[in-house]
Length: 440
Image 1: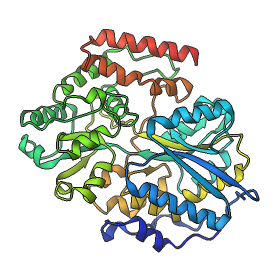
Image 2: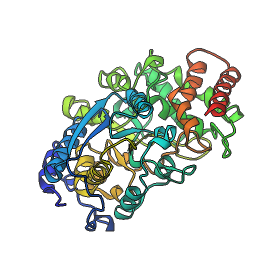
Image 3: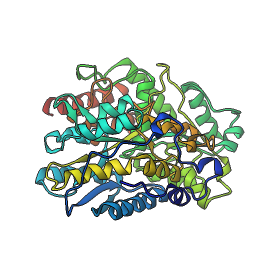
Image 4: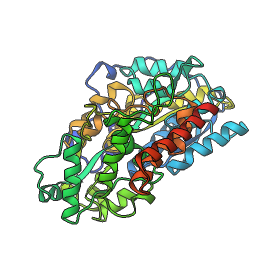
């Protein structure tokens, strides 16, 4: 298979980027010419992809352009269906149940562990991609290799990385010259921003990415955990109580309404000037550069501060691609995924998104886009600091259901918003988790 001309894609995907971010070339061994693909599409193949809708325009544009070129080169027709983030998981679950629907799904977190018996063995593709592009991060393997069935059930794609997004001028007005490095300093900054009428905002609603991200950050930052390594429930602990008390204090400095925020909500509030600090992907700054040029220079990003546990452990929304066994064209589906995550396509895709997705293959951490602007660099490490949900147990059907039901987010909301005691909130979460882990 011949790669499409890279210059054309870089010109398309790097619109608005500085010259330092235009190169899609990997300087490492991962850039070496890949061997001929072992995946040969079936004659007359056509496939359907179900994926989530991107929050940045170039995601969809470049992905669609690469798909068209894949079809031109292979003759394989590809139909793409995009859904809002929360809608992908139930749509994929329905397809698994009825045995009909999309061939490929780009889903979230533990989704493949819910129905591994319905999924194609992805070991050959995952091992090929790992060898070709520098290997996968540990969390990527945890999410996509099922130790119960002893095979890769999905191909890791990456994370929509999260960092703290803040207005620098307002941070300075609140009395901070630099971004805080620990939880106490972070809380003081939030309180200072509230005093100058520029409150922060972190979702406590059922936001797939945003709410899970910061609540797990705080939980893990205090040393709390959902389960022990043997998957016994460990949520009811002094560490969790400390995390809930901290979040309750932080909530007092937030903009009203965060209990109902979904994933787009903090983007909208921040760009409207109503919110001074939040936790989000690079999409806020991305949109500001194109649509709010006066605001963009004042938007900065930072890796979240470390908690008492001294670990930077973030719940970034992880996405992987898996193929259903009912697919009539499994080789075509595998070749499509190989093609889309090969350097000639993946490099301009990530570059054009300004780093909105941090890929699970280690070789792509060397893309020039990550150092083209210091505001982009924090997202380079998103995959490396990502911890899987259900920590410190292991991914699987139970943590997948717990995440889908927002057990951890609801526990934080019960204390911060509903004013439940930490003991009662932990007991409620503990009961929900015990039910889930017992019956899955």
